[in-house]
Image (cartoon, rainbow, N blue to C red; front, side, top):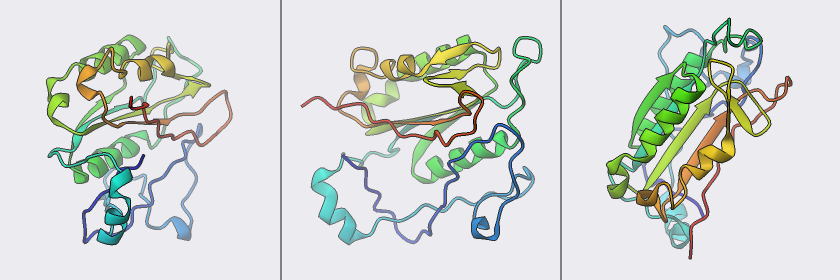
Length: 211
């Protein structure tokens, strides 16, 4: 299944997909359209348009995306970690720019976006559970969840050094726990360092839709 966007008059947006454990490297000329790590600089986030020809050739394979807003988007970005509880987890330099870019991109895509920064593991669980229960899910066509932090294979850290399993996150949005999103696409973007090595782990996970 795919989600088509019929918006026009917009240019491409080269969304960065790589999280680095150390300070981020300098951008090359090829990446000049990406974003400065200077939080005082303006952040532009044009969205790649979908042509009418593309839409009409794929619309039978697409989810319905007619609601306005298109859905709710949750962004949890852990930038600064508790030096006592999690001494091995360094500050994610540039992380505050990443969550601001996500906020602007999904706002431009007509999502209602809520951003939460620097949450301990239990606070992350509570935030996700509250998001799942929001009654607005009934009248929208999709939802987005973005988690940015340090992590390990299959899990992501709160600022207190405690882990949240990604399987728990996905299950929180299944039909039993979040019935208002049944038969609607749920998109998950996970950006984290895993197991001490730098890897591109931004991913999109669609919950299966029952027939």
